Each structure stands twice: as C-alpha cells, then as structure tokens.
Length: 136
Image (cartoon, rainbow, N blue to C red; front, side):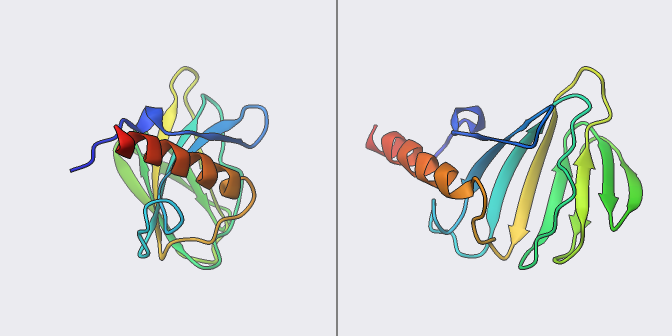
C-alpha cells in the first residue's frame, strides 16, 4: 500500500491575483492510471478557477468548504462537502466566496485529460516526487 501526504506533492501556480495551487495526483503520465486524472486545487479566499472547458473529459469537483460553481453562465451555490459536475465541453469555474479560508477542490476527470499549459512541467516534478517516495 502506498500512502502520500497530499501537501507534499509538487504544485504549479495557475491564474493571477490571486493564484491557485494545483497538484496532479493521478494521471496516465504519473501513476499510469489510464481511466482518470485526479487534481487537487487550493483556491485562496476570493479566488476563482477562471472559466475553462475540458473538451475530452467530464469533471466531478468536490468542494470542501463550499463556494459557488458557474457552468455555462449559470451560478450555483455549493454547500460544504458537496460535489459539482461539469460535463465535457461546458464552460465552468469554481469560486471561493470566503474572506479567510482556502477552498480545496478535488477534481476527478473521466477519462483522463491530455496535459496542457503548465501540466507537462508539473508531471515531470510529480514523477520525480513519486520516484523518490518509492525509493524510501
């Protein structure tokens, strides 16, 4: 059995003012898992995930403290410990509506997504992290 502390995983900064921290936990390129990708996002108080679309994957998004979920310009309140769903091809974003708490999002992509933007570098750093952990 392998156990990892999620906060130990390398991260990349996405967005601007404020940035959010993205960790890639599971993907074909890191763990060999072909069926899905799992990403953890830390969204600072007042932060957003900026509207984006995943053309090839459905996305299930777990909100630890709640917030707002916008999909195709429709806004939904999301309660603490709730799940939102963004079907592939839909414009969506997540918003941290608090003034003092970090919103943690656990994002499950089915099927696994193709890396883009900052993900290739993050994949490289994640692979190095996993390799070091497995050597211990």
